Length: 336
Image 1 (cartoon, rainbow, N blue to C red):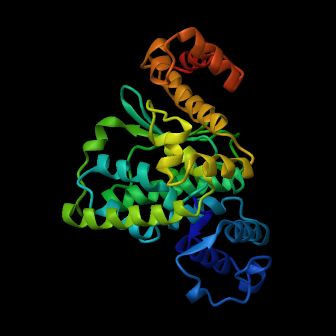
Image 2: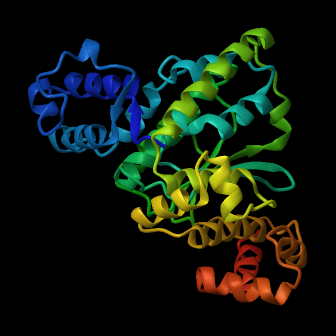
């Protein structure tokens, strides 16, 4: 996936900094945007430039809650075509489906995991520190989720729960102001959730005919971004979508429109191997199932391509350094 950020996010960040009294010249220092005409920067900005602007803004404003303030301004319009697609959905279930499939057009380096318990839908961010300071990145994402749902549903009291994998910061009161009261710190991972029953909530702006048009544009944009991605990242993305199937290396090469020899050479140039990528993705899938606790370990082993659960246990320990039982037991201990 091409490492870039939607331009509206960057422009809104610049507006926030200028409102706080930061000179635009100082804000843009160290980025390729210095001296550029911001009205003509294009649809996307490199993540390197976005990171530089975030670091400059944090330093020049001294505002520890900057991520929350930025996320609160990321409305449906800021999400461009994906935001428009959200508005055409019939209900919240369709919004989540679109978000799960197309969120990389908003944050290419971010990985999100979607799962369900008996009564809640959960979205987990296992690598939220990917390219921004972790607290800023999570603040921005969570506030944007809250703001987007408010815009879609017209409901400022929508019951979202936010969990953060770090201690409560000095500005924790701003979290409550922006996100509501259901906020928790010192958690195992960054997780956002709400009751499953709310997936049936209808959207007042539903337009199925327009949705097809907007979704087609989202698919085109995602394909354009993916075409410029590293082969290793394209492989990860493909394997994640093919959970339970896990094609062999020659099949993956064919899916990516290259010969097995060329595919292997490209991976070698990137310093990765197909087997390492496959094991990484299978470990991700196994960990999610173990934490959800809905499937017995034998069934998880079978889904990952192991006929013998003992072979799966050994492989999982080799991949992660812990046993499947330890992960499942930890999840049990976390239950109320």
